[in-house]
Amino acid sequence: MKLAARKLLTIISEAQIENEITGVIKKLGAHGFTSMEAWGEGARGRRSGEWEENRNVRVEVVCDSPTADKIAEYLVKNYCDNYAMILYSHTVEIIRTAKF
Image (cartoon, rainbow, N blue to C red; front, side, top):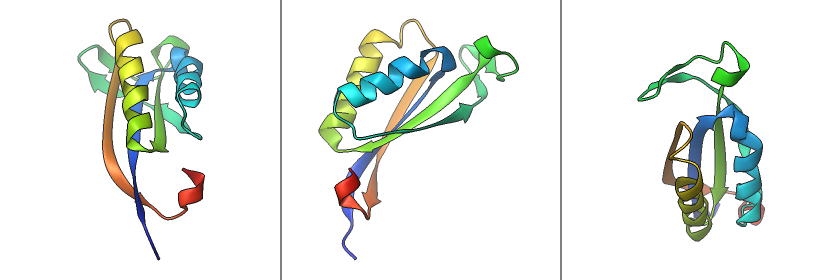
């Protein structure tokens, strides 16, 4: 079985901008994403998700490295100053290359 390297970009942010984040992901060339609820604590305090304005989402996208870089750069430039958001990426090996 042949594996191919791609980037896994993970975005954890306020749920109120989830649709904007996923729109950016698609607009900048990724084929898809996975989104799920997330909670935790950091520099902006505890986000437990107990009420709608205090929910976080974790959005993951597997794509090529240039696309991951474009998405991350756009989010940093347009959202990180005004919203609780962290981003990180690492290289993953995928099996079904046609999907990515």
